[in-house]
Length: 86
Image (cartoon, rainbow, N blue to C red; front, side, top):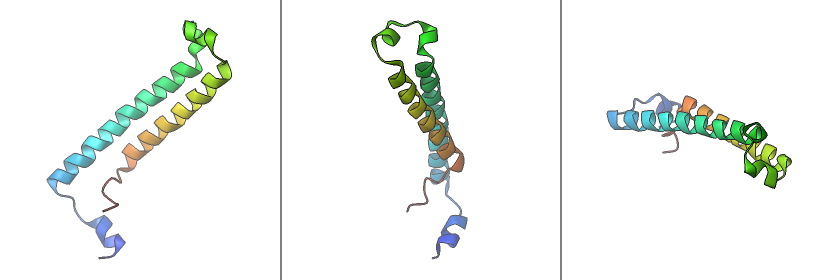
């Protein structure tokens, strides 16, 4: 069976449920990661003691990484290519 034929093959109910669950989980985790990235980037606005102890550049870099990873999780949930590797 060629790859194009496999991609057009219908999923059974169990696989559809799995894809739906993974997609919802990816959306949720993506939102959480983006929220954490925004919080870390703007940590001085929240005036926490943590922001005074560490370098702000480190927070901004880690916050940017969190934003990128969150965007990737949302993209992965949107594409729904979970069963393509079988």
